Image (cartoon, rainbow, N blue to C red; front, side, top):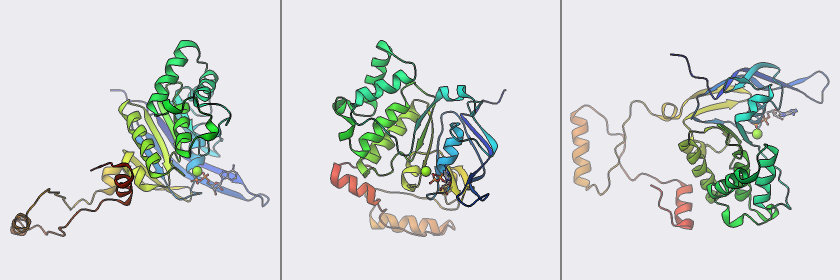
Length: 286
Ligand SMILES: Nc1ncnc2c1ncn2[C@@H]1O[C@H](COP(=O)(O)OP(=O)(O)O)[C@@H](O)[C@H]1O
Ligand SMILES: [Mg+2]
């Protein structure tokens, strides 16, 4: 059987930038390779300045690699036709503040060669998807950071791309807004859209990504399936509801009779984010 074409393939990417010191170069990306299969959600995490945005820009053909190569669905990133199937939400998207949400999407849709009834329908669908129907006629200048990121995401989806690249989609967005964006990413995954995102916010990456790469000072230091990366192989978790102390004691006794060590019993902890959302939104995410 022929091997399927990956959505993203980055091979030994190296990118040097000139610095203000003559002839000195700054190595922003140092031999990074990433393969993302179609339909996956891949999260690239790393501290500020580690080369995440540069990697994404090289993939989009916005910066030329010093060496190495990138392709999208098998098409070389330096060629224009590779961009046909990609939507991009940049780190600090710039929008015309005097345009409304709907006008913004119409503007980007037209840039992508869409128009007429097809574009109108697409815009309505996207406004519903990103939950901005109520704000469609409001000027972008009055949008919150979370709303701006969501209209940015809608913009990235306008031409129905098979791959979306999101550079820090939740940076500067409050927990409620971040959660909306996280849910949107999950919706994209349900639709079979490949997502390549980067972030320095680890918890959010953990909640949406199938695969994770950790980049540090331009180098990929760890990569793999999220489940494999965070699993503690020799441990097993059992979570019970309404267990009596007697039942817990019985389970502990059973475990020790079978030669297993019971490392810990107690109440699982929620995260501060979940607690915040429960108290402010009345959610009960389990
Ligand atoms: N256009 C550029 N010119 C010079 N240096 C750059 C340029 N873009 C990024 N860099 C440098 O490359 C390194 C990686 O940057 P970047 O890819 O933006 O990191 P991240 O997105 O992980 O925060 C940083 O040291 C940054 O200052
Ligand atoms: Mg960046």
